[in-house]
Amino acid sequence: MAENEELQEDVVETEAKQKILVADDEASIRRILETRLKMVGYDVVVAEDGEEAVEVFNKANPDLVVLDVMMPKMDGYGVTREIRRTSDVPIIILTALGDVSERITGLELGADDYVIKPFSPKELEARVKAVLRRTISKDVIIPTDSAASPVANGGKGAKNVITTGVIKIDTARRQVFRKNERIRLTGMEFSLLELLVNNSGQAYSRNEILQHVWSYPADHRIDTRVVDVHISRLRSKLETDPNNPELILTARGIGYMFQRIN
Image (tube, rainbow, N blue to C red; front, side, top):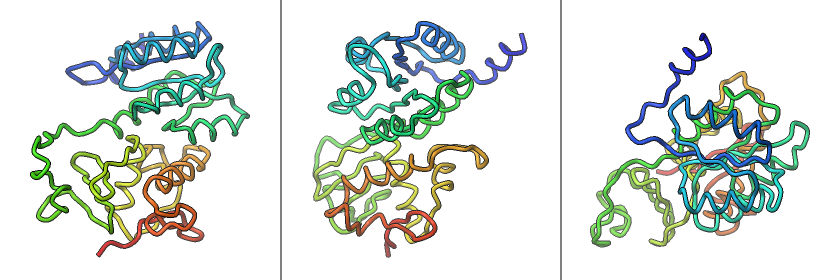
C-alpha cells in the first residue's frame, strides 16, 4: 500500500500520455518496467529484441526509448543507429554494471543517458522524467513564410535568437542553424548547448553540468564522461574544426564553457 501511495505522488501530470518504448530481451524486466511506468502515467509499448524494437518504434512513434544494449537479432547499438537516422527522440540505454565501454559507445551513437543494471525501477522512473523534462520542445508556432522567421532575418530584432558567427541558436524553437541550414541536435544536446550559451564565458564543471542538464543530484555518483561525449557530439556538429574548437571551449582544470558572446 505504501509503495502504491508513493507511486501515486509521482504520477505524470499531462493531458496526453507520453509514450515510452521499452526494449529488453528479459521478460521480467519488460513486465516490471511496463507496469511501473504505466502506474506513474505513461503509455508503454514493448519489444523483446532489436528488430522488433525498430518496428515498434516506427509504428508507435514514442516520446522516449528505454533500450537494453544486449539483445538478440539486433543489439542496442544497431537500434540506436536506426533511430538516429530519422529521429532525435531521447534514448536511455540499459547497460551492465562493469562495462564502461558499453555506456560510452551508446552515448557516442546518440543515447542521451544510461542506467546501470541491476537498477531499481524508481531510479529509471527518475531518469525518464528528467530526460523528458529536458528534451520536450516548447509549443511554438513556426511561421510558414520563411521571410518572417527570426533566423531567416539574421536574428535582427528577434527574441530568443542568439547569433555567434554563422551559428544561430533559437532557444524558443530549440533549433540551431548554420547559415540558415538547420543542424539536428538531440534534446539533451540542445539543453547542454543552451546552458553554456546562456552563460557564455562562464566555466562549468562536469558535475555542475550533470546537475543542471541531466538533473542528477549533487551527491549522485555517475561517470562524468556522459558530459564529455555530449560535448564531443556538439563540437562535431557545430565547430568548423572539432579538434580545435572555437565555440565550445575546454576550461582547464574546471570543465567546459561557451566562448564569451558580447
